Length: 449
Image: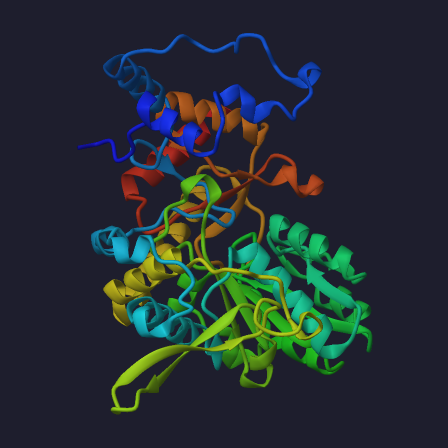
């Protein structure tokens, strides 16, 4: 049976109205003044039969450009990655997708263990000591890191690189406004954070230095050079990182990061029009009690059997409001589970192999564009994204690619960086084939001839 919900019958409706002592449904709205009630007819189509409706909706859905029918070169924070089949099998189990906050550990062991495994794998990937049970997404995770930094250092200035995802920077500014914290943006130079400009902004009022690794342009920031700039002023060093890239890159924890955050979307979570996703949040042990959200820990029961419990919940729902570190009131447990299953299915070798495929395929595409007369504007090492300069508006080119070749083009950088008008951010993941890359380059070149 496809329909799990059946509308109530007229008898059901009558019994409910009788139970509350009401003659009809209109009586429920008597407190609303007549003059503000809508008494006309809605401008909607007449009801159709089930078969007619399903046919119409299927026809509408078939017009969507999705990642099954189109080759996507769009990244900018959300990527088309391989999702092991086992992910959907596990997260579709009712005990997981109907689970809520595990307040009662004795009946939530499966959920708690899943979160514990997520935390453990995030720590291993990032090189950090402690990770929480997940955040809403990468943007809010970064904003929470900025607020933690301000609270821990008791300073009111955040310095953030312009090479950080523009949407994440906007979220940081929104959080900071309510806390009366100044957010200073440092420009990029040749696609990476301008270190001299960063040094010029540093003083003893700076709570944190925030960079992205790889950054929004796909370039690899030199964390080794940025770390002392932050720590020389006793500021915290915050790194937002694509977790898949850490299958090939040195983890931020090994390069002196105090807080590492990001979005777990590359692991088993569909693009889904930009969400919902799953943010991760990892810190050094000294910041453990300042972490927003909650932590799941491992223990033993009175019989010595392994068990899992919520060990730290530094939020206002559990402690005094003035002691709370965040108003994060939930976590993305189901998406965190999806990420955990994906990471487990891939394993260390699989994750490293996919990360290397991203690097190699992006490099191949970048070279192909260069050989076809396009300028790759930034030098230096990159992960799975790079920037090319076009001779026409990116929006116009993307429309042509979509209609003519079933290709979802790259991100229009001119939307966020006026100096990069007609520049496209191209993402190439492990799912893109040589044929798709060659076709993409050929179509872009053809549109310029």
